[in-house]
Image (cartoon, rainbow, N blue to C red):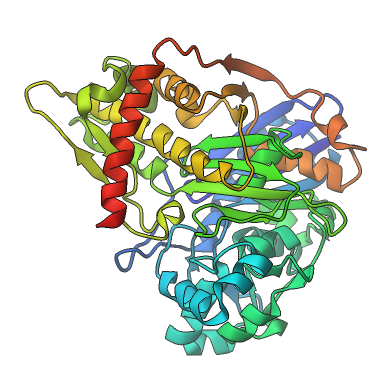
Length: 496
């Protein structure tokens, strides 16, 4: 018996097949082999055609099935993880009306700011746990005001994972966790945030039906099965945004536990049982995958948009011949802690929630042509991401998240010794690295949602720890001095 999981990101779509008996991944694949195209019709905008998600999902599925050489009828259920906060619009025939406005698009910042002002900060924060900000509801408000002809044709709005599930099953639904990431869930009333929908003029009949995160949410249709090379009737049994799902994949489910990623975006995600929020909405609180009205499980999310695109930019432009990421990681080790004064702020990918939705841009500061070289640039980039995470964790402490252990997948920037050591030393937290990823987490989620696993403990009994990085405190003074200089430069940018 097998479980199939997908992680639909903005860079690629990954598929993993796990053996339900052993809990081990038997095959995985991702497409495209280079980052998916993101369209930017204007500065600060970011759009993707959802059909490219589906095309790459089909290609990844085909590779997985060829590699695994199993009977498709042995797949019991499917789980979906997806890039958060995006907006997808379809008409009554389930046809796309426009490209998806994705997570890093900042066009709707002013809409969220106006909503916060008119509705009131106390009401928004106490009920939504966030400013309406630049999230899905605000993006839909932008469509209402700027593309009314598209809005009038809209049958349902969806998050990216809802769209993939619709393509698989023909059914349109969503989850409480998904609605909360779009800032459409009222945590005081345990219901849709009617007051925000009314303010934005969003018709309630456009909201998809709500299903539990772990449940049968539809079955694979004959048409989708033919496209994917699978069999009809497989249950879609789990759906979650990529960051809640990443935390889930690391068995981060209880208060005080922390998950992190440093891929397309840099993320620290902590679980709390207290209904708290950051008054400035620099970090955001959503319903975690195991949240329920009876048991609070809230995910506090710190997100840095510019992480992956900064490192990708370095990889493509640092030399005439494109380097790979392992080579960049090796290069970073040739520079000392603090990069001899060279600072980089990794905020060149639109407005950053951690900075109060300001678009401060990326900064390279203090470059000295006599002493700095490419190794300093790469180390400064990695330190900038680690420093950004630590800066956000200081904010998280204000609302009760105190990380002592950070769990992450053995992937992306966590493959770099410089990045790992920098984050461990400045945060004074142990870093545990595991052999898992979002698509494996989605497959495990499908196992729980379909009843294949009887508990979370059973789903994660074979979770494999690859490495532990402990803070040594041997060079704390150098790390803290470097962070202090970086923080001072950041605060200059925020206030200017």
